[in-house]
Amino acid sequence: MAKGPLSGQQQAAWEYFGAELKRRRENASLTQDALGALVFVSGGYIGQFEQAIRKPQLDVAIRIDEVLQTEGFFERLWRKLIDDKRYADYFTAAADLERLATKICDFEPMIVPGLLQTAAYVRAIMLANDPLTAEEYVQESVGIRLDRALILKDAARPMYWAALHEAVLRVPVGSPSIMAEELTHIAQLARERKIIVQVLPFAAGAYPAMGKSLRLMEFEDAPPTAYTEGVYSGNLLDDPAIVKRAQEGYDLLRAAALSPEASLALIESAAEDYTRCASTT
Image (tube, rainbow, N blue to C red; front, side, top):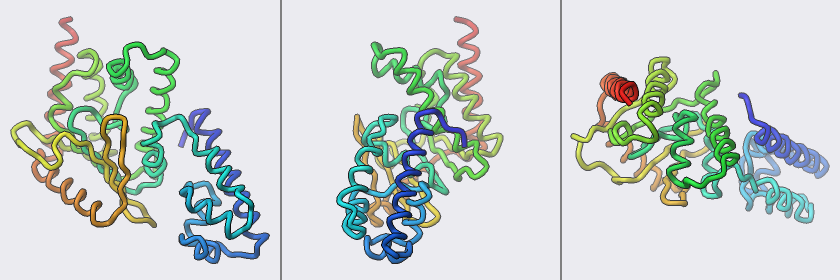
């Protein structure tokens, strides 16, 4: 998967973290399974830390220091590396998990999910939130958002299922031409069978957790998670009971939504409406 300069630097830094972990583990004559048991994770997790596939949580880094007697080395390194300003603090952990997920299910009540946004749509969202944002910051943020979306083009991409409220199609973001491009982009991804998309129509009425975005992620070797987002805040949930309830809510959303075929037709119809509107302005 292609990476921007900043993400490449971050990856190299985490690879250093992993190489140091492997070296010091082997110096202590511990296998991955043995170290994992001592810090309360699986040996497979330790292997993923060493290969820079997964980033450890802070408490795990601290326990590694205690077991390997590294005098806070891994905690200090973690604190330095995790200060990744590509994402808001509340979204960083969710963004990391996004790259490891085997399945991602998004629901958005008002805007297009981040993985489906075009450059022009991202820009319009940013300027709506802060009209005085510096151009350099806007361009950097657009690049970061598009970099995330590359996972949908990767050969090993996760199964991606998006449920969108009809308001996402009808409330214009930016100009009609921006909306036409955005909806055409979503339709193209669906027609290329890279995503599944359903639209929850206005006629469906009330729905679970009204007004709340929801993301569900599943993994090959870890429990599923749920992520919800509010105003400048986010919650990454991994309690099995809460995740189960979130999954049930998402199932109800999909049951009330239009079929993928009908949803695609509605998205393309909305795109055509915006195209006509753009041609007359």
